[in-house]
Figure 1 (cartoon, rainbow over the protein chains, first blue to last red):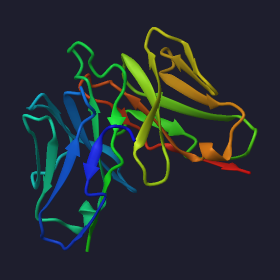
Figure 2 (cartoon, rainbow over the protein chains, first blue to last red):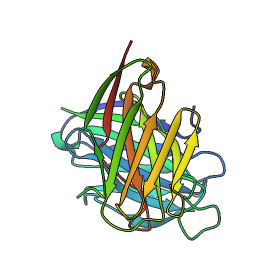
Figure 3 (cartoon, helix red, strand yellow):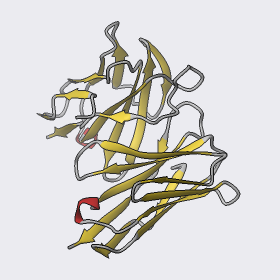
Figure 4 (cartoon, rainbow over the protein chains, first blue to last red):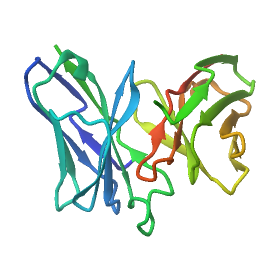
Length: 119
Length: 110
């Protein structure tokens, strides 16, 4: 157990639907990162939050949104789902981002992922 | 495009042999990390090497970094079947988050 908890582990839904993926970071970590892993695109960075605020954005579609709550858990919302959104979605955490004491210098701790299948 | 590119894409070896994977990147970095991913599971952090370091060891793992060539290598000695996994390098080139390469799939045959 890495200490990063992701729920649900598996999700099957139809095209056009909306889903919410949840992530609880490791105790003491303030930063949360979301990654999408698909066979053809590899691991793609989506978005990063630090202590409730958006810190960096990657290749995140407009149909996707995320937030980090005061208790530091984060949710990734995926809407108007398409077949191509089928992928593994990972959450990772670190003490903080670069420039913050503790930073991300010691690597990320990943959760076990949510496998999303859009049918 | 990916900042880090692992090579080879796939590697198959016998148990007990050494496995070497390489990572090349394009722009200057502060540090580079290696992660392991067992099939369909989360990534596990293996080792981090900073730009002012040339070599680092952790158990059966040895990582080297050559900033002049913008490359790193991961050596797994005396491999075991349990080492079968995908291995990714990640670089911090954009200063905000780690960018992962496409990975090397390692198969260790008993």
